[in-house]
Amino acid sequence: MHPTPPTRSHETAWRWIKRPSRRKREEVRWGVFVMHFPPPLPACAAMQEGGRDRRGVARSAIWSRPHRLTAAALGVLAMLSSVAAFAVAPGDGIENSKHDFSDYGGGVSICMFCHTPHRAISTKLLWNHTLSQSNFSWDVPATTAGTSFPSFSGDSYTGPTSRCLSCHDGTVAVGDIGWYQGGKPATVYNLRLTGAYNIAPEGNLAGNHPTAMPIPFGNQPNTYNGVSTGPHAYLDEWQADPQQLGIRLFNDDGAGEITAGAVPGKSGIECSSCHDPHNKKSVERRFLRGSMKGNDQSYLCLKCHRK
Image 1 (cartoon, rainbow, N blue to C red):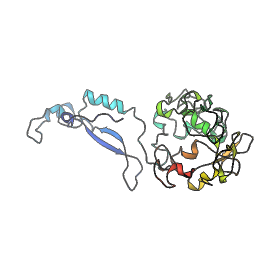
Image 2: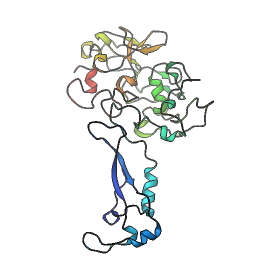
Image 3: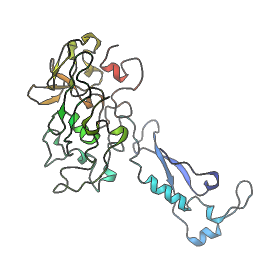
Image 4: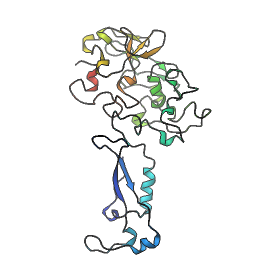
């Protein structure tokens, strides 16, 4: 939520501007509102200024220039300093996106909140963020088609969903990383996600779209993460290959090893099937790989479902 803009009586004391993203594109995209204060004048110069406004009414010298910092302005400025990184357009990359925590990490780079070139928690993805120890499950045993909902542990499941939930279940701080400059640092950004960003409090995935589950790739039953497509699924109501429409699929070798790319009979979906955490393939806010509305195959839901 943006702070309330200044009242008319304060407009000569501060100016409100919109700050563009760092990347220059064909169309200007704006971030959050920020206040701009030019360098202050010496006190003697400030007292000498005044003059009249456009109606000819005398102005107080203390309000005569936009750089005068009042107590109210300082309070709003302090509040703005806690606002997250400026928004960046979908597809423009991770810098300045909601996954860019570099401004809060005490020198930790963008990448190292999740990855590290050495001493990673796991070799796969060179993962650097402490994994959740929650056991994840849904509140019902199966879908209406009879596909069972899985149960899995955040610190042992090898699919990318466990990486997403290492922040998005609210049990591990965003800055709880394993390795930086010679060892495990104290938590560099002690924020635990809450509200809409905490999608699985205490491991409860109730109300969330299935993930770590099979998809009827090729319009055939598939087995993934120990779960098989339910016997009542209408296989012709699924896109044969959602990868052709920008969805990322994964495969399970049956021994617990999950890798990217669909394999007939062994394919499934993960959080990153619909979301691109690096904001490179995103076409919509929330890192989505499809639009949030529509009636064609640009609409995210229709990239998998045929309705």
